[in-house]
Image (cartoon, rainbow, N blue to C red; front, side, top):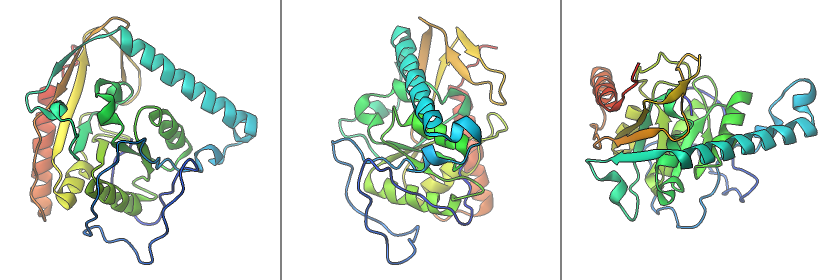
Length: 275
């Protein structure tokens, strides 16, 4: 998942696991609406099919290197699942977001440092309808492969490449009933600063923003810019889902900034670092 900022150029492609849709005859309009909700079958994957072919030098660019990368990513995903099963999770959901049999299409907002374990706190019927954003870089390709073990798919794009097309793609998928999950302070921070991507997407589609966080007193914190958090085995975790936030359509720049500040305040209310 990365910060969403509209940029120029780039592409969003489909995984070879499913047949791609016929190309549009005209450039997509972010304001166009499409009908139809996701089926209950395994969602189509939007992971860029060139993930494994991202240019690398030496062994990483060889077939063996790409195979090893996929294997290691699968092993890490398995370890994350195993660690999660040992934790005791308390769910706090005052708005009732998790009570739906047919999950609604929303924009999920989370902090970058809680990304790794975040999908596993949601029921499987929800995760199958989640899409997220990964950059077009090599590291973004690895992140897309990792998150592909948990989510319905990944959209590729970034602030420097593919931003405009990724934004349009996310808008189309939200209109079809998919949920888009974004790390609002990613990909480079500052930590706990809300960039406008989630608010902009909600403004374009009318979908509510649902903030959430998980908090554990017993955890490891990496020495990264976001201080990535990993719960320790058998940790007690509070999984907190905020009430949906509806933003206005066609906001001014000042109104959009105010909406970002409101989202940040509500997300900080859900967040406990126990530092």
